[in-house]
Length: 73
Image (cartoon, rainbow, N blue to C red; front, side):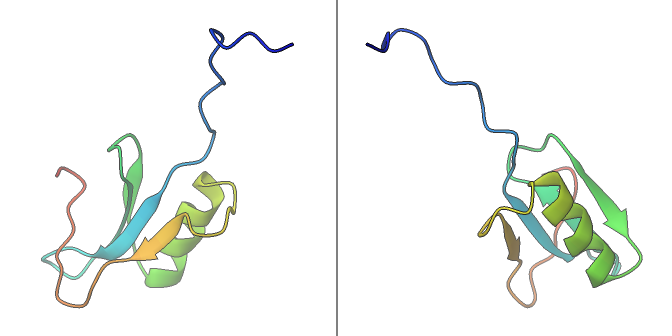
């Protein structure tokens, strides 16, 4: 019988959003603001996000066209 008072450990993966900032740099950041970075190209940003989210399906999303991302919001 499982004790319902014991919580499961938090997931090792994060959900990421990938897009450009106002200066055209590629940004990947997790939804909790715990990790992210600025990248030279889209492929590098997506690779980072996929690696950080343990390659789980649905954990990486592209920002809508025209949206400007920031690491700080």
